[in-house]
Image: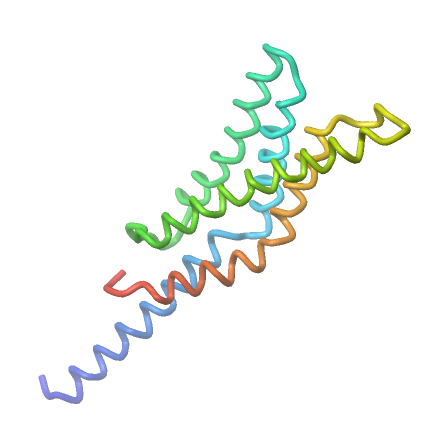
Amino acid sequence: MNPNDAQLSLDDIRRMQDRTREQMVRQRFTPTYVPLAAVGLFAGLVSVDLENPWRTAAILLGFGLFLGVGIVQEHRSLVGRKPTALEGLFWAGLATGLMLLFGIARIAAWAWLALPPEGLMSQGTLAAAVTAAAYVAITPLVRRIFRAIVQRGSGSI
């Protein structure tokens, strides 16, 4: 093998790694799965307003759907690799951010709903709707951040 053939092979490998990374980003945020995940997130978060045993059922069904969407996406993915620590930190940060948003929205809803007329909606339901809508709305931004993290990742795929 001459050096030119070796260089062409290395260039092909790098080009295919870029395609693989791009496919990984594309498959994580497909338009059919994002709304399903938002419904699961909403159902899981709205459970704070329910009494037992409905609370337990809503938590299991809602967060089960949210996690199930992620599992199905991973199972149906065309490409895969072991996630990096930075990617794990990204997903943990996204989940923490959504829970923080839910808490802030719940406090804001409590303050807003304390004003007359009272009793239109519960604060947990309103905060869950805000959080689920925000999840769908920030998906393009999250996709760009995830793309930058995946592109930054070194090593072979």
